[in-house]
Image 1 (cartoon, rainbow, N blue to C red):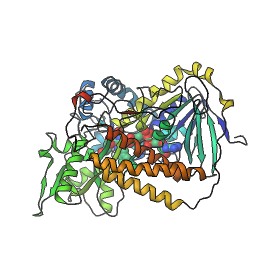
Image 2: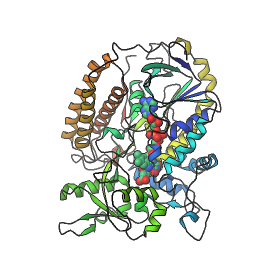
Image 3: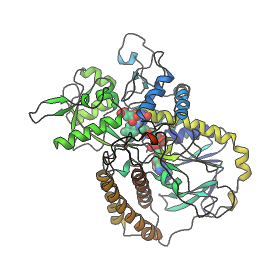
Image 4: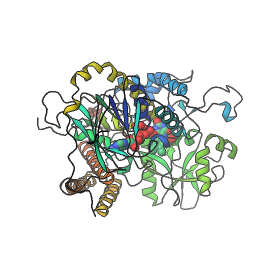
Length: 549
Ligand code: FAD
Ligand code: SIN
């Protein structure tokens, strides 16, 4: 590192979940890679994934059926060509993960007598076939484990932990003429409190989603939408932010903070039940959808929300008591242990659950190569919107997308390498201009704003929306954004402030997108416009920050 904290790499990857590390491993074959990540290398949503990867691996399954289920869940908003391309690439990419050393559960391990070596394929909401390859109920941890191992031992990859990306460096940002291009990123080294300049030929944003914008969320602390906000400031297109997915079944218990009960539990026959005033527990999903408890996620979450609002109760319940303790311990070891730790034995007790914010279906608009339209700038994984998910993501299609598109992105970058090299202007990039002060007594204000956003997003921009509530949310977010821009930003840069700025920006993108969509579709339900408008089929909501050019 030079005195002025400057680094030159061939490629930069921001984020170290599945999308980031898999991109880095592919790119490292063609040059040096900096992986910039804001916490420890394995702080990410990937690590918490339970259900698995949706992928056609069974002879009784077909690509057409996987495509059909994805389109049905996406409620007439998916890009069918993108869906087909990603679905069809799934099996070969999953095999590469296996070659790298990922261990997925076989039927033999579950004690089945036939087909001992075949992978056990789980089922989840919206899938008409068993097609989820999994590592017990800790699929994400297994994937992250092997990717971290591979990345750490690769001499072409340097991992910068506790470095939070602040802003992309683009040619337009610097006032240069010609096509816009991304030249790198400024990042805060939060251990040493210095801002560093990372220059590259191509930059891959793999910063994940924005679940933390809501008060109740299944997501890791990192999920603040940093990459979406950063790309928006860089004038990239942002699409479909109104489609925020709420997972129907988060464990409801005072001693547990946001623990997911995988949809795979319903795949093994668990049914949702509500408690009547008589004390009796009864199923309710049959009055909402023919697939009942295994209906697509938007429908199940909305049904639960409706039941809770009608009854005033705090939670509904999952009933999987038809399986023995032995079977459940073997299939869901992690979930079983977590439930036991608070006195719930899944084989004997009902599991109390509530919905919570889970997945950002919208994001930085890209093609299936992760290309954003800005030269040298790519977005992959949950941060991106490729057209795969449409108005509602089909369960376990996210890990599939992160895996497949990361490799496509790396291939695209490598194919354009000569052109990127010609445009390279690393020496002309200015260093970060420091703010006026590094000390602040404003932590309380940051915490307050953070809490306020998460509360009103939950209450006004949640599972069921109205025009009036969205307008209220808009007024509040405008105020907070003005405060951030005009007040704190001049004073100091800290990780908390950067995350608050991202969260506020993403909240505004969600609100604006929701306000502009005057219909109900998939995850966006507005009771003032309860019907789907067929004229808007396949019409994305796209927001782009105006440029002064
Ligand atoms: P992440 O894994 O979230 O990684 C993002 C990375 O970016 C992190 O390393 C983070 O620290 C870093 N980062 C963020 N901002 C910055 C910044 N400003 N500077 C530097 N670094 C930054 N999907 C499935 O398909 N199947 C499942 O079974 C499944 N189960 C899930 C269970 C849970 C509890 C959750 C929360 C999600 C689940 N999902 C599942 C969704 C899936 O896990 C995620 O969509 C996927 O892992 C996202 O991968 P990613 O690499 O895009 O992002
Ligand atoms: C789950 O295991 O229920 C989560 C799957 C997903 O989010 O795709």
